Image 1: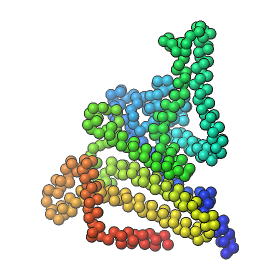
Image 2: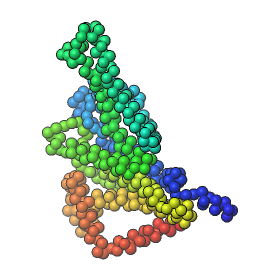
Image 3: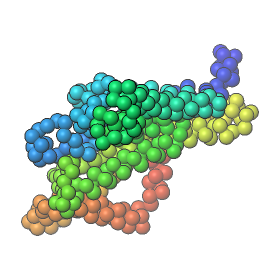
Image 4: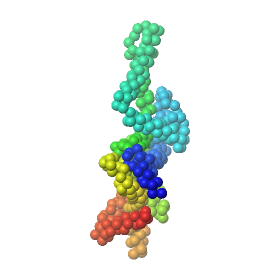
Length: 400
């Protein structure tokens, strides 16, 4: 038994190929991938639909395009103006629900594998691939242009390729690859962060993970600006504005409203995607920086396993605490008014609690600010370091 145990320890190393197969690293990467896909679904549900008024104004025409976070409308709008080069079933066009996302996601997976193989290829082979792609697009643009010009010359006599008469103007052939580029742009509006995120998770690139997260934040920021009431009164681009009232808490014992929970879910998925993805890369970077003899040392291997296992537990606890704390911050005004109502028993607390201002977005922002001030002030009364020490020791006992 001792010999078998020693052989198993000797086979386990801290080299990158071995770490890629460790269950802890795989769990972190799978969690990051799952949160990225759920984030795509949540973003599409919240920011994907066009406004009802925009659809009504355009006679319920599904081909009408608005700049929402949804790719099929833009592609159908492009299809009506010249057709699509990529087949519909690969774009998710004419599909509904999750089926609109399935085929593009498979394309992203294939692209991730291709990018990984490209990075792993020798530099000379990468150069040949770049040259091949450039030659392909150049031939795609030039050969049809020259061919149509020559054929028209035989039929109508010599003429310059740019002509006021449409049948004798061949300049449009030079821009034929732009149709594919336009389709990829409409597709990339939704799936570019997914592609970057998958490349970052499985290709071990923190920059790609950070870019994907930043892209989602930019989308949310632009949506909030374009649906801001003063801007909507001037320019309505058809985006579905989120309600200005957070609403009464109906979930988790009246802690958060349905709208607040959907937005909180987006924030938690972003945090989980970033934390788990960068954690996997960070642990492997640490192992790669170790001396060669340390990568086979059983004590270093044991220490590495303990660190990663602790990180998994702490990540789950921290994400849960962040969600609970944020929900408490959004409902802090209700909590204070309820305490005043219990102590005083006046009608004033009930009237204030039902006021419209507290249900508005800025009311919840003020509530969260008050919560931060209250928690910051409590550090003079509550020994937070001692509390966190008890929490960490409790986690250690659970693990043991």
